[in-house]
Amino acid sequence: MSDVERDLRRKIRDIWPNFAVADAAAWDTDPLVSSLIPAARRPKAIMPSARSVIVLWVPVSATILHTAPSIYYREHYKTLNTLLDITAQRIATLLDDRGYDSAYVPRDGYHGIAGLRKDPSSFFSHRHAAYLAGLGTFGISNVLLTETHGPRVRLTSIITSAELPAGKPLEKDLCIKCMKCVRECPANALSGDAYPGGLDKMLCVERSGELAGRGISPCGRCITVCPVGKKVTPPSDDFVEAVRRYEI
Ligand code: SF4
Ligand code: SF4
Image 1: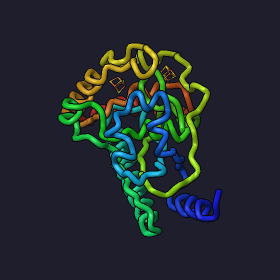
Image 2: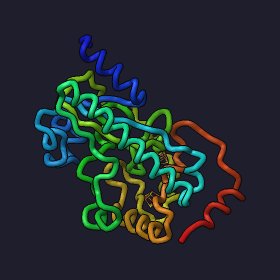
Image 3: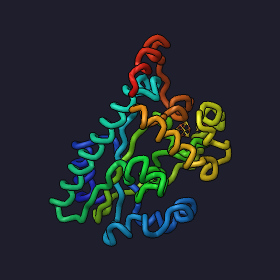
Image 4: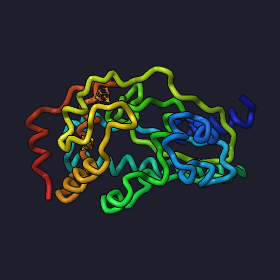
């Protein structure tokens, strides 16, 4: 690693320690990602000078998640998205000030439930960036699983012309195929088939729409029950029942 790269990594880490880097060229060469992500939604389509994609992650509180769907989890989810967006913008500005083309991609690249009904994919997939950076692998639930927190992470990305040492996809599949996510899904949106074939996105979107109408989206059940990653003792049943009374 050159002195310039080491200095950039240190400055990024000073802002946010939880990050990994994917090579922007990997979208064209990785067999899984190149088969799933259209050319128009790859980093070099967004920024032709792109060399790296910096992926930031933040853990979701497993304690709060146990109440999902709930106003408690909804507010937590919004806070994490805002935190990621602001942090990613700060890092993009840091790189921009040093002469690198840089743009962060907002946490959610779609337009609410109405937008998801038209196209249930965002214009840029942070999950696939995280996969290419070596942060995790895809589970039966269609979600990226990480070693430390399983599927309980939120992600965002910064595309930059800075060249940084990149990770590579993990060789070990983190999903243990327990099928807890499949059994838990209230919309029957998960078939149990291996990624990428196991999720009926429109059933999941319709479930989110129904919860949004009650003020308690997102759903979060499949990521609550996944046994991969750090374990926590859940809140009491009485508390979960009490917090779930708060809905429109
Ligand atoms: S978020 Fe809810 S509806 Fe969607 S797949 Fe997971 S459990 Fe099913
Ligand atoms: S709940 Fe089990 S099957 Fe589903 S993603 Fe997690 S480990 Fe895989």
